[in-house]
Length: 401
Image 1 (tube, rainbow, N blue to C red):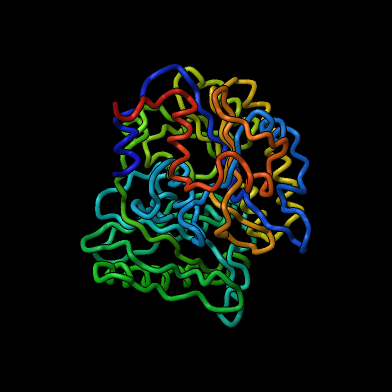
Image 2 (cartoon, rainbow, N blue to C red):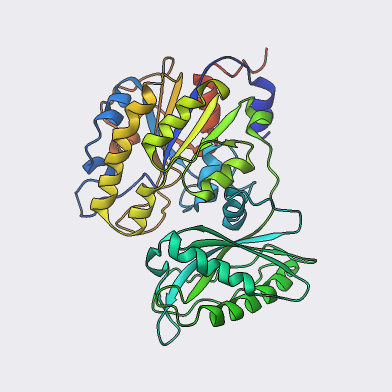
């Protein structure tokens, strides 16, 4: 039986409020043997204060040993089995900017990159080119035409943009063209099922024309294609949890994932202070608030331990803005670990904290990877976090007689 079969049967209505604060890529590793992780090195008085009356543990995003992408990582947090429900980044990115995907569309998340004179990638993100510089380049790619295919090119943020192919016979099972390293050329798109060979040919032609159109650009002289994906269909938060849910996120991909599970996207906040204001303004209209903070992940991916530590402290400093709203349940977690030591997402379980009036505190007075190992939640699969949230909010009835 799927966990949603139970929550559909047992969810109950009341006036409780749940806030889930996700510090993307929160988990880390020591940068030096015997040293602290980023979270342990950071000054986090507010998270530590939550730990005193909360219960903590370590959530496993997918399965032990599996390093998740952001999509599977968040699906797990939202209570959707990331093995059963698979969503490509392209669909998330497209939905996040408000693009309405149709059945049969294939969406791709694209990153501008820099090629050197030999055609090798020297920068996978084109120096994180500012949005005001990348937008005209994405719009330039709207000149691309391919017989029988309708093409949409939409700017997103910084080096990211979205491409959507619309036409007959397209499949979304195509490998990324980003080799995930520098000093090598971009990969060719390759299908991994028989229904996606046409998509491969379309993508190759798009890339050929794009290279011509971007030739001569100093930074963004090419792009990679990632997360080929068709439109997914998922049950909504209202269906499976009985919750009116809102998402308060900055980056489009996370808005997209939230929209796909039936959350409303509220506000246009650009930082945690503004996000707290949006939550406060919408307090009476929703039962559940997803608040996303990106920069603990991006600094980890950059391999910058000190920057991730600083961003963790920035996240901690915002905690009182949300606790003062007095939610019945406050959750702090991450969608995966992104240790600066590895400069990438990793398989390590993620520190997770639940604070509520009816949780069973575990006597820890700090919140980090070490304390989570012996926390009262233990190690658990992230897909069960939402049932724990509902239980702590008194929103789940008894199972069985």
